[in-house]
Length: 434
Ligand code: URA
Image 1: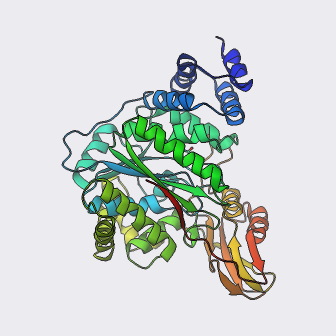
Image 2: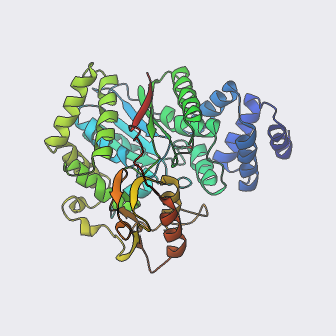
Image 3: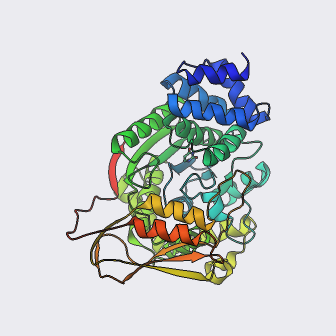
């Protein structure tokens, strides 16, 4: 079939066969489909969805578009974690070193910013010199030595996702259960892991704001992973408000370091510890979840998690002095304060609006080839749920020479949900799929 016929077939709601999907995936990985046709197919999938079999075929084909790694001789379990994307969600950068300090091997392949959400790779690259494009030999060597290495999709590993991910980011085709499932699991299958802990976000700042859709996504990921021979469990977590106090690439690295030093915000610390403990339990290092949690907490409190992160930065070419000298992170000096325009209970801060505000400042991309500004973002001074008075500073915007500031300020102001009465808070972890 000609490419336009394949796109039309999906656009009309028909099912694509494995060989038709192969044409699309190979077209992405090898560049034989131009970006406008890849994007049109993504939009057709976005609107028409996919059957379970199509999703599973797409996942396998995207994983096999590059090398599939395997680690038969590593002396410990090979387990990873991935999130469906959130605002201020920096947990991978905290829990990876913590899990590695507990004896888990973590060959993490992550993505860049996607839509209004931040990406692990953009955050890591805000550390001067940090290289997320390691060749496979260096990836292997660092993983064996430290128990963790963190890279992005390359032309060798998950190349189809590398292209499709960057197109989805700028073509408004992110919020799709089959596309998210295939994107995440193609990377995870290529990593050669035994087990995966998924953090599926729901709420205002998630790609699946409604709980029933998040549940569907979680089940699609867990079932597709298990079909591919990967142990998988998922937790569904609340992303109504941002995680932690800092949003933006370098700001989030700063907060990761604070957390690994034991002085960071409770919500992010607790979630990172919870997810790391699940990795430790799944890997059989501590079969009981309470003991696994205790081990992870020990690694946090003893500073071994921080030391692991410092070693990782050095091994991947970054400047490890950022650990004790956060001024080495290029955080923009431009400050604009957002104040409460009424008194009452700050019941929520809409994470989606803050995510887009950060993108307007330059923390995300509007074109596939655009670069990000690592130093811009938002620092919350207050978090839900608390009482505020008119004029209180709720957050500060860190901007670069006013770029995007007007739109970002408008979004940040509209993100504040201030009511007369306090609202009952939902917990952070809403459900689990074990
Ligand atoms: N993370 C990914 O790797 N892909 C998605 O589509 C969403 C989150």
